[in-house]
Length: 261
Image 1 (cartoon, rainbow, N blue to C red):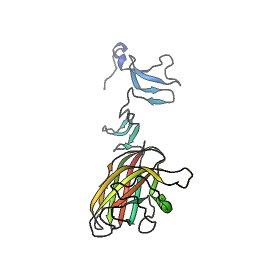
Image 2: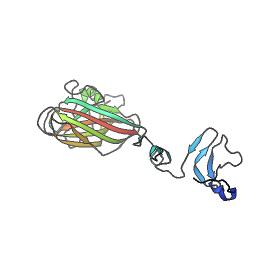
Image 3: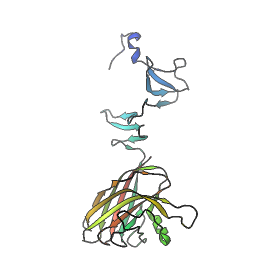
Image 4: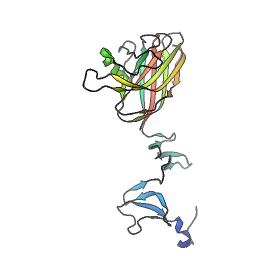
């Protein structure tokens, strides 16, 4: 660190800091901090406030660091994100979970809804709800008289969100090796005060993945591939699982990491 001792202001003024309002100094009006020759900094102050505003957006506009230099808080104005902790995760990061115990597929290759949260779904507690047998689940669903069961399988999105990661763990109840496909999807949900309320439309695959050689002797982990990360408020999110091989019961847990956009 340098010292100003014994040096004249004429030689050191460039390294001195001042507020832009040279008449009133620090007051109740915001004033940017500059160096001695008027070069603006990212800081502005009043008597009661401190503002940080970079001259250009950056992934590290504001940072708090440990003594060793590692950041533990970072404000990323380029991506409108606040990152915290030693892992610098988004401060609004949250988790969704879907799970089912011994879910019974209605047919080999049929996509089945998985319950949201801790709902007692599968093992004949709540009737399973199917949604197509194509490569991906159907992009719409009219559950008819089982709409009340479908309710246990959807998460209402209350604000715009971004999917960061999605991981599934699966097993089955028999010794036969199975191929299990998992899809995370978003849908629009009808809410018009009509008899169609609860119908799902405009389905989009958010993430998908596959586990092979799944049987009751193993738990297979699937790091699902993000296909579409943005979900707008007002939509619903659902998870579906498919036993491609047969109708052996499926036990599954799915964890979705997301942050508020």
